[in-house]
Image 1: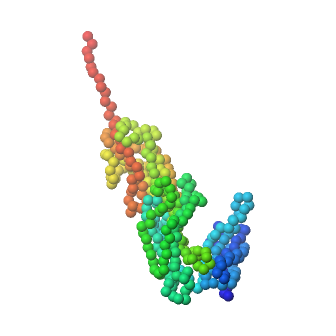
Image 2: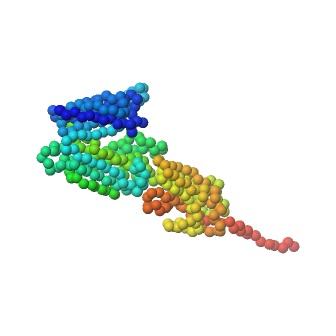
Image 3: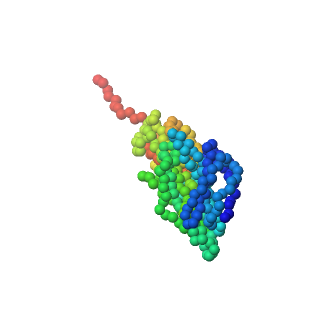
Length: 339
């Protein structure tokens, strides 16, 4: 029987590798049954010998020991590799208009997946049947919409794809399907996992890619009502911004006339906010400088726009309000003679 020299290189995983050590779990088939061997490790670097390999393939999983509440210890998987004879290789990559890493997109935007497979020998009589097909599974994990942190709510979608030929496969029209009452306001992540069903009886992961999904921004223009007439800007007039995309520039502009798309107005300096970070943002911006830009009486529109990696970098209108501005004071009266 063969044995493998396993090289432990968890240095890059050091923030996750607990001081309590961990294990390498070896999963393989012995006499038609799935057998699990746990190999203790106490260092994040080094080498050890595997248990004897008695089948064409085996799965090796790297776990660290995590201490939880009440000093309970659980295992957290850090990495997984499958080894064996005639094993195919696969890689999966997320494609997004946002070049940020790790991959991310907005809830209303499509994204893509590129899958590359090589080493499949589907027509070879020497290759076990379970090594002739590669499967792809799509799953999700929901985030808390308040602090954007992962929750325990997740699952696997019902659609599963299988491939029996080598090549590169690309789909650029994928829409997120994270469950939620309003699809454009969900926050979370979706993952595509490429795996085999080896003779161990356990799915063997070949590659995995994850994309973060962030909600569409929402805006409320406070203190100004549609169609109302003003001779001064209310002191509480402001723009309330929520779920601004992590890489975005958002601002309000004003122009004379009714609302219409494609009009370039005058930006309100106090409302310009720019972010280049990793989670959505929020802000409350006063419209204190609005009245100085209303140079004559008439109808005006305030628009709130955002620029993100999407829409070819062109501004997108988030909200707007149209109102009448009048500073003319009219006096009604009469002059009479007293006799």
